[in-house]
Length: 316
Image (tube, rainbow, N blue to C red; front, side, top):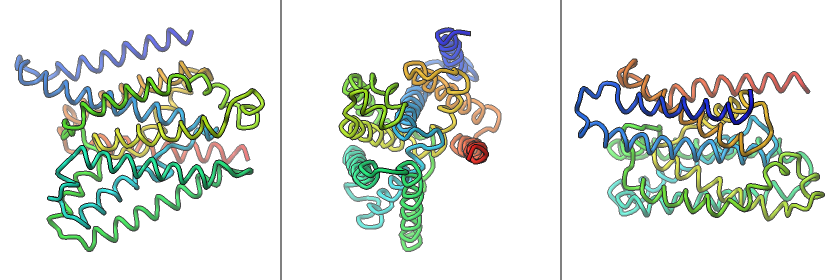
């Protein structure tokens, strides 16, 4: 089966999932149902695309399929930022009420963290991948521990505001940020278009990429900025979904069986949309909101992550 045919199949499945989600249980109330479900679908497509795209890039520049931006602590950093703002200024402060300001602060801090991580790791020779994983886990643990410390001291009423931002939810999409998020994603796609041609070469490794004429440090810096922005956009819209990128990108690799990034990116995005919209449909119609989609995805993704670790350990 050719790659283009596989992409077509995934596209048909994605459209089918969207159609089912938009129509199942509507009972003729189209004027009420379609706008509300349409906003959810738009947020899901945007979130899934941002996470899948950023994960493909991250795994390529690290040359490792068991790493995602979430693992190096970006999701934990986002929760820490929100907790710190509420702990310091309160849930009624301008930093929390003004969603655009909150969004800007989150993106700025995450981009700065990515720059520092780059300075610390990617300019060193040697086992950058293993050091990246180790430092990422350390930072993620530190962020989570510091967040928990502040949450213990915080007012219980204020803690409720933090809880809404700790877990991904497509039922309460931040519509105020949907418009600016779409604009940012479009600008990012336009900006990164000239760097996409380097992905296939970067997958060969740092030395080969440099020998083939790629300005490695320059390109990696821009990719890290894009990753931080995309992850922060997705997280600010619906909340952190730690293992979604790991799951969909690895499924795309297994399904496509190719190394060309134009196919991997497209298939990862489509699989992400299928998983999120199909999963949300199951959560709403089968589980009747008794659980959340993020819990299911993180459980499956976490299990798959352990499988990948055990699989890779047998090769060493």
